[in-house]
Image (cartoon, rainbow, N blue to C red):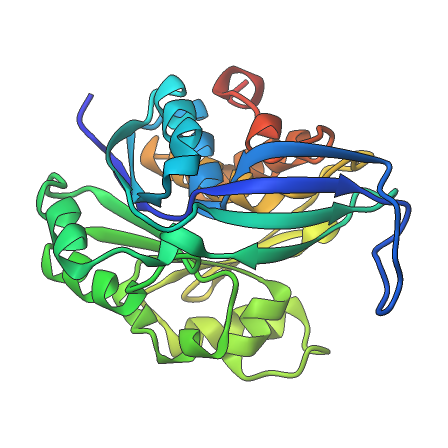
Length: 296
């Protein structure tokens, strides 16, 4: 099967601390447990795509301490020929998970932001015509990748998280699919945080009329908009254990369903079901379901 998606994205070592509550300023809090996981939005989304049956290649950079991340991707069937090893430490995240399953994250980019334009051109040049490029905002040179991928005639999906002020300068109109949560969507639409999901999606669709907009709403569900078509998909009611990879799972399975020719409504249902399974399990990449659990 020909390569369908090149995901140029982050690979992190996640340091996960289970805590009774999120630590407050000035507080010293003893964690209930600690575990080291593979993570990074890029790695998580590549694993979600691979488990959903997509032929995916991963592009990015790790340090010598992160070789196990490349090995993990390979073991999932991801093409890792574009995973490079640099001289900085691998990116890592410090994650607190509270008793309700919610999380907060401190991110150190490390080698993720060491990619050179020459390396990126090499990755894009070897990507077959008609393929998709998937991007997040945990690596460097996103504006350059958008321009180059568009020039190569590749389809582009982007999940610009974390959504810093620099995202407002990105040529997002070059993309085909935009994944954002409610906070990120409000930022991009220049709306107050009190704006409704429908307002955010409608305004984003007006700003970027050629994009399919997917607004993820956590436990409330997700909203899809393309032109005048707006689809709300209610989240499945489950007891959350760890929400760390829910959004990444949603992204991977939505794109997988799209590549299978599913309608937006069906792709939203499939992605929501996959995300619901994810939040009932601990871990980042480890919690992502396989296709036979989702494509029933």
